[in-house]
Length: 238
Image (cartoon, rainbow, N blue to C red; front, side):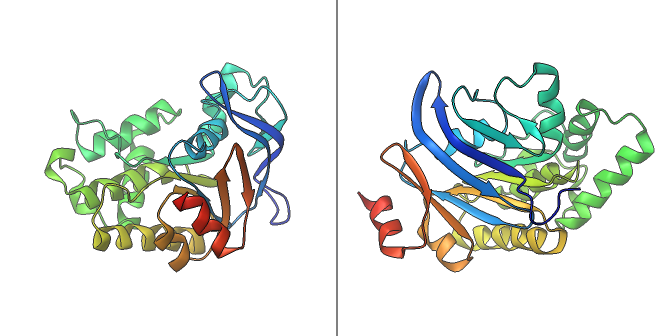
């Protein structure tokens, strides 16, 4: 268990890549247990590339990066699944498997991350679906669900392995405002009740203005923590 005063995620002088091209230089970032962190900026400023680097989907070739005890530079292929078990990931487009039920989607993830006992799998699926208010949808196919319901299932999926950090990439981008508010409240509840750190990529100022957290602003090949509302607004509009 990570102590409250020890960061779950650390970057020092890190160069963030998109493909082979650097998009952010000299990234310094520490994220602690229980943090709510926003990464904001216009499209193309490297926000999602930071998330992908945290997941070891993008390589870290320059600078230092460590996520949940795993050093990112030169991470071994066999260690990446173990790193990802400590992370929950939520995407804008849900990324559910459309050819299987909600229950089968969740079971697939558990089995892929090493769960073997059917009773334990069934119990954990029920637990996470209860937590997002979707237990009665277990046998539904994704196309039978609304966008908000699909995102709740995606949140349930992200919680399966009791992650230390949830990475949410524009989690409300495809939802209407009322549904988005419900999703954000659910994430904040998880953050407060479980102490799960949340790192959320967004370009929507209304979200981080209403739901207060730490804000990192990406612009001009840099990403820095910023408490200045005018500077944040400028980064999102220029």
